[in-house]
Image (tube, rainbow, N blue to C red; front, side):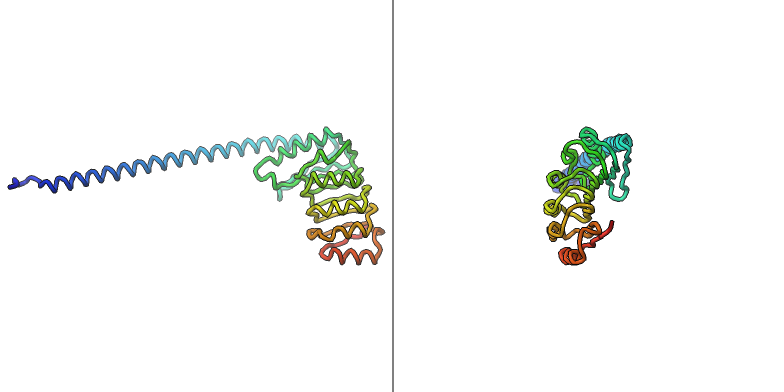
Length: 247
């Protein structure tokens, strides 16, 4: 016979079981809390590291921009930043540039575009009537997407090297260079959008090699480069392209 006021063995066992279950729940909750804190701490550390790296790259890029501005200014040119696309525009018209000058500028524009988005950014280089020393192609890279070589000593061989070095070129001005029809086959390898070949010896035979350049929207030629009949022919070959027969 059980004494009045005392708990039965079953009741005691149930109490112990419930207490044990409560301890287990609390232990699971504690482990979850600790894991969550570790995860959050690790995530915060990663965010801080990424931010610090970004800040370091930004400072390095800003310093390189200032140096590149000075380098262009020293050669009578200037540097302009494209605020829309994040690219760089180097104006070096009539400049006298050595291999060392261009090599240093290339290093600097690479630093300027060294952020994670830099690979997609462009460099536009205006070398109109510039005096260049040696092989220009070796001082360019794939970031150069717009190139003005008006009046520069460029022939078929040197243009082929440039195209291999700058496969993303989409704007190319070759006015007054010594290229021939053969170079049009080289240009056709590019994602070319705008091409100017005024005051060159390019003929209709060379221009028809651009037939597969589907992105080409404007072709600038000299007024006397094509006859009216040839102009109609090239418009058939390049139906989506505007042929500007200017001066």
